[in-house]
Image 1 (tube, rainbow over the protein chains, first blue to last red):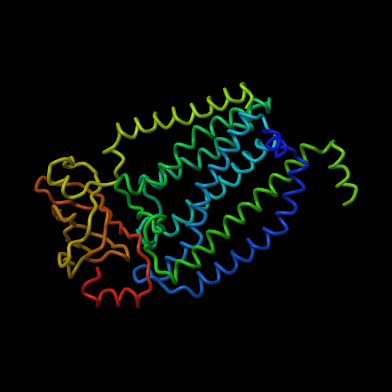
Image 2: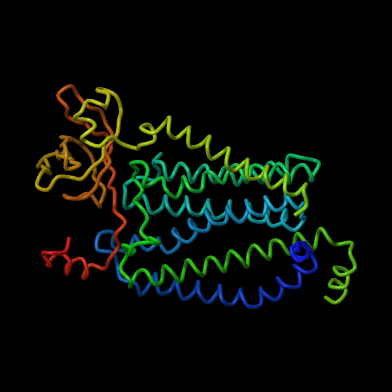
Amino acid sequence: MWTWFHKLGSPKWFYDISGKLLNFMAPVAALLLIVGAIWGLLYAPADFRQGNSYRIIYIHVPVSVLSLSGYYIMAIAGAIHLIWKMKLAEIAMRSAARMGAGLTFLALVTGSIWGKPTWGTWWVWDARITSELVLLFLYLGIIALYEAYDNKVSASRACAVLALVGTVNIPIIYKSVDWWYSLHQPATIKLTQKSSIDPSMFYPLLIMIVGFYFFYGVALMLNMRTEVLINERKTRWVQDIVERA
Amino acid sequence: MHPVRKQRLLVVLFIVVATSVAAALVFYALRENMNLFYPPADIQAGKAPIETSIRAGGMVKEGSVVKSPDSLRVDFVITDYQADLQVTYTGILPDLFDEGQGVVVSGKLDVTGLMVASEVLAKHDENYMPPEVADALKNKPEAK
C-alpha cells in the first residue's frame, strides 16, 4: 500500500507534474497578486486611525502568514526525509528553508517600517517580534548547518532534526500576542469569530494572502526543479530535456 | 509500514513532543518575564521595582492629558480600568497617541509612584475600518 507514496519521491515524476502545475499556478499567482495589490493600495479605504499607513498590511500579513506555514512545509518535508530517506523531500526541505528565510526577513522589515509611523519605534523586544526573529535565525541556521557538513547525507539529516525541533516556535509566535502583554496587536483575522477588519479592506487582504500562497508554491517548485535537474544531470531523462532545448 | 520506518517515525514524534514539553516548561518558568510591560494594577500592587527602567502599558485615561504651554512636557494617566498610573513625559509623542488609546511607556518609577517616561509608544488595536464606518459606529449609542 505504500508503493504510491514511494512513487511521489521519483524526481522524474516530480519534474513532469510540477511542470504542468506551474503552467496553471504561475498565471493564477500573478493575477491574484496584481489584483490584490491594486485593490488594496489604490481602492481600499484609508483606516480611521492609521490613515494610509495601514496599507502595508497587504504585504506584511501575507509574508508573515507564509513565514509560519512555510515552516511546517519544511518540517514535514524534513520528517519525510528522516523516515523514508526520500531525496525529493530533502530538496523540498532545503528549498523551503531558503524561501522561509526570505519571507521572515520581509515580515520583520515590513513590520519595522509599519511600526515607525504607528507605534513610534522601528523595533521593540516584545514577544511577537522576538519570536519572529528567532524564526529567522532558525531558517538561517538550517541553511548554514547544511553548508557546514562535507557529508551531505549527515547534513540533511541534521537539518531535518533542527527543522523538527524548531516547530515548537510556530505556535509560540502565533499565540504570543494573546499569552503575554506585547506592543504588537492581537490577530485581526480570526478563524472562529468575525474578523475585526471592515469587509472593504478584508477582501483585497484575502486575495493577497491566497496570491502569496500560490506564489510560494510556484517559487518553491521552481527552486526544487533546479535542484532536481542538478542532482539528476547524469540521468537519461535530464539529458533528453537538455538535447531538446 | 516497514518496522525500521515505524521506528524512525517514533523518533520524529519524540523530537517534536520532547521539545514542546521543554519549551512549555521554560515559558512556564519565565511567565511574568515574557511580558513587555507592567499593567498599572501590578504597579499599584508594588510588583514593579522603583528607580529602575521598566515599561508600563495601558489606556490613556479620557480627559487626563495635560500639555504644557511652553515646553514639550505632557502629563497623563494610564489605566487598565483597575488602577491608574500618573505619567510625565518630555518629548515628541507618536501620531497615534490619543485619549482612550493604548500606549506603552518606558521610564522609571519614583518613590511617589509617578512614572517619569523617557519614551512613549502608541499601541494600536486589531480593528481596521474606513473613517465613515467609524463615525457611524460612534453615533450609534448601543454599539461600542
